[in-house]
Image 1 (spheres, helix red, strand yellow):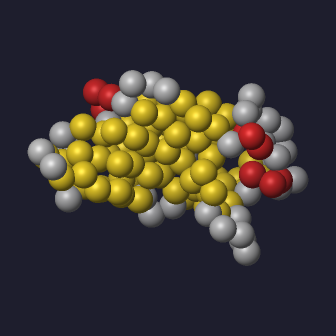
Image 2: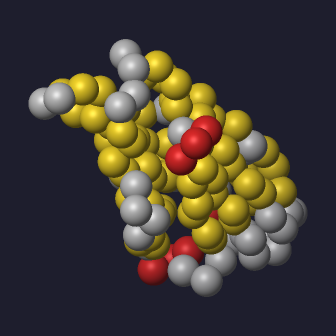
Length: 120
């Protein structure tokens, strides 16, 4: 089993910044892909940004140029630096990881979610 523990959410004014962290622990052989998703009230969960084990990144159009995803493979941790935050960035942010636990064994894992509120 693997656990994902998120931190860094909070309340920030428009134009402000926050940094989210997500640390994975447990039975990990390789973390193939890590990502951040978010879910606003009344909306479906959407991909914000993702990063592969090789460092390739992908961003939602709405956050390009403002958010940066990065990872520390040695610490099994992914980060999301969020700058120039807007009220529409408000939501619960979920960490996701696709993890190979052993030969022929790979699973999806989700964190518990952390609230980000952008409001004046």
